[in-house]
Image 1 (tube, rainbow over the protein chains, first blue to last red):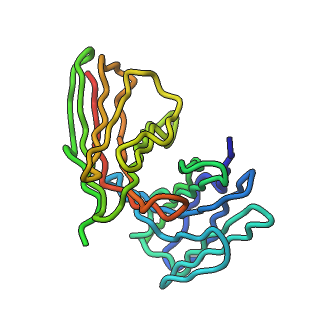
Image 2 (tube, each protein chain N blue to C red):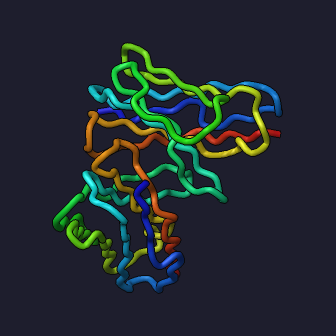
Length: 109
Length: 112
């Protein structure tokens, strides 16, 4: 099945810093989403982005489908950005989401 | 509109018991998927239902089963619980096909 790799696994920042999270995937995809898991466990959808670039406030994402990677940018980070960020994809032959192992982001005041 | 609703939020069960979890999707969404999250295995796909039919199934033992009703609400059942079944169980809904998924708040199951 499709493989998803996220990097870095851990990231520690000072408030106000910028960061880039990366997601590599092993095959063509019909769907790619970025999620933020809150402290209560819920996966909050950040972007649905199988290709192209999107922005939402301080967050933006870019997926280069031909090169099989996606990037999530967080600018001017805040302590509330802390948590685990997951990239998940749906391959062209299926309908299940395959998740990466996540990036644990810690933003210190 | 209302999001994906999972009940209960927390459960404590004893080994050997069985448990049923519920998921109500976003209105109009016909696809419901279930995922298990554990510290060791990460997020793993259990199964997907679309219009009351199981469309996809992950690599879990037969103790894990599910169903979907005509109103798209879904239940998953785990029989003969084992300690290793302790996990966060997440439900996601979508319109079907390769579109975005929206997740519920999850049910945290502890098996003692």
